[in-house]
Length: 83
Image 1 (tube, rainbow, N blue to C red):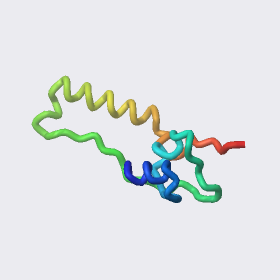
Image 2 (image 1 turned 120 degrees about the horizontal axis):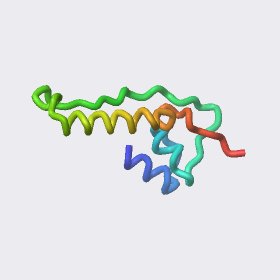
Image 3 (image 1 turned 30 degrees about the vertical axis):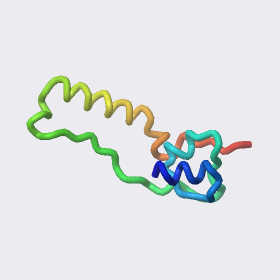
Image 4 (image 1 turned 180 degrees about the vertical axis):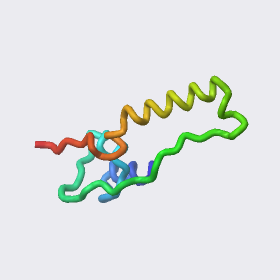
């Protein structure tokens, strides 16, 4: 994904990028008429023996909330077409 992003930025052609990479890059434009494809779910996981450790729970809650707060960026809903 990172290599594809770099190649597209370098002008090597067109590529399917996750919305959070393509839409947040001011040097790239989304091709018209192509709808976002649902991406894989994002999981925040830990080893079962650590799931009740306060610092691990705090980290998981923080990461989960950060992802939820930026959900539109991951789903492509934050995209606004250039005039």
